[in-house]
Image 1 (cartoon, helix red, strand yellow):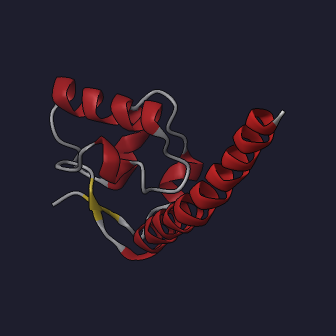
Image 2 (image 1 turned 180 degrees about the vertical axis):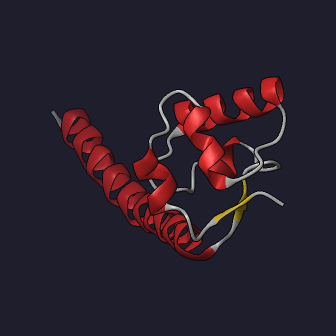
Length: 103
């Protein structure tokens, strides 16, 4: 019975330590991403998948499609050219207009 109590105490201690260490890191990573998504310019002709994912409405799958389209069809000439990528609509382009660059 003492072993069961010791294991339960160890489990509780492990959960408490992990949540106090991991939760702040997750929150700070989310805060860093939020800060990046609101101000950084993204050159859609050179950005990697991770950078493209900072655009509003762009997840990993869509970012990968953007890179693939760029590799197959060449650089984008204007931000609106993103609409040629399957899954990118005018809403995504408009939400990110101030952040998209095509240098």
